[in-house]
Amino acid sequence: MKLSNYPLRTFKDAPSDAELISHQLMLRSGLIKKLASGIFTWMPFGLKVLRKIEQTVRKEMDESGALEVLMPTIQPSELWQETERWEDYGNLLLQIHDRHDRLFCYGPTHEEVITDILRKSVKSYKQLPVNFYQIQTKFRDEIRPRFGVMRAREFLMKDAYSFHLNQDSLEEEYEKMGQTYETIFKKLELNFRKVEATSGEIGGSVSHEFHVIAESGEDEIAFCDDENFAANVETLDSKNAPNGGELTYARGIEVGHIFQLGDKYSKSMKLDVLDSSGKNVNPYMGCYGIGISRIVAAAIEQNHDEKGIIWPKAISPFEILIIVLNDKNDSSVMDHALKIYQELKTDGVEVLIDDRDERAGVKFADADLMGIPTHVIVGKRGIEQKKIEITSRRTSEKRDVKMDEVIKHLKD
RNA sequence: CGGGGCGUGGCGCAGCCUGGUAGCGCACUUGACUGGGGGUCAAGUGGUCGCUGGUUCAAAUCCAGCCGUCCCGACCA
Image (cartoon, rainbow, N blue to C red; front, side, top):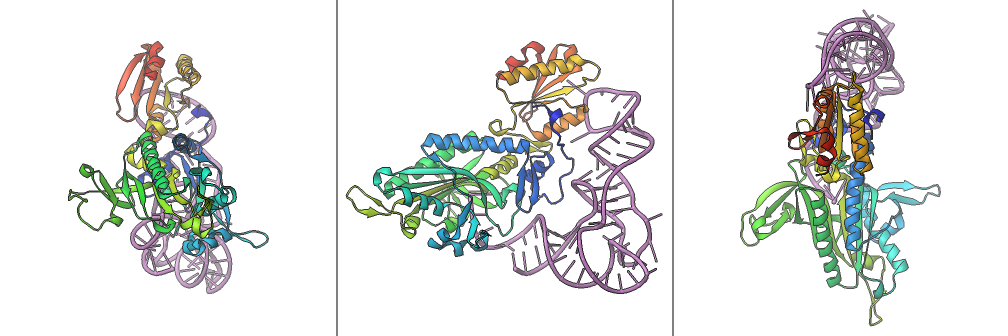
């Protein structure tokens, strides 16, 4: 992509209503635009990041054997009456009336819908276990939205729901999902911890959260790496780890949560299947969430400096940024830059070229703000010496390489 | 929902107390010079001062109500 074709620009000043550094940087670099409190548009570069996270999650979920579906965002209130969650959720539900005055809500989660699907289509134990997931926009009318996409009302979430004949099968899938989450957050290059947690409104008994470690996190977690123990402090009633080990405390951003729900939903919604002895049983259920859009903010909280964002390679909107400098009076500079750009594109590299008519300072400042991992600097000065500079956004490490060896170096 | 801010060109702010021509920085447009870390000079574009009502000869400014938005607390990926 050519920056000269991109009409948006960056900002030196963040809007005064942005408090968190990730929120400020997302607005300054034009990743998102606020429409209303807790409701954001994902602009082109922000959307690229979102899609990368989504793809990573999708790939690992598919790998785990889960099946992707897409459920409706709008849900009839009657389903929620069955589980008595219409009252429990209360004002968190964004309520909608259709033209016939039938009451709906914009889905904040989908236990009821998926359970309804199962009771209409699954009758035999032979159809279990099964795990359905979706990546979808949710709406929760939060009491207080804050910190940009970190706690938005409208947000993108991966939610998965598994159904099992018995507790053993549920526990097996729960473990598998835990492993899948570990893989996902490692691939996203996040510093995270899996912790014991409470279950909240969703219900059920066992649950674990996945927290990205960050000063700005809304939760406090405690862990003891020696004992391989970690928990949300909400769940702790002791100052020590189970075997007496010393706890380390940190703040965390909850980006994933897995639950064993048991038969709460299958019972209240009368989902039953025949087991091998011909007896009706209520399946056991698990649910597994990942806050896709929240991860964008969490990743920035963990990867930035005073100049801007420093994207992990796995989620950067582009792999390489070519910065063209001082090309006004020497068309060979742009020619060389475009040649590199084309070759990279042909090789399937996601490359952005700053071919705008801007001064060096502006381009460097924007490059640092946008945080693409690798910068390739093509300028008059280098071209005259048949050299091109490659720098790392994260380490600032610079190396001059011969002009005709650039592609080779970039592929290493 | 309780407590506290804030609403003035796209962004950051001043002006309000003490009513009388709407201002600054950034950004944007044009030109010249410049050209490897947000450059200089010159000339410009852009604002029903959140909304409604009230007071007044006159309201961004005073009063009332409403709306929006942010922060602190109770809830959540």
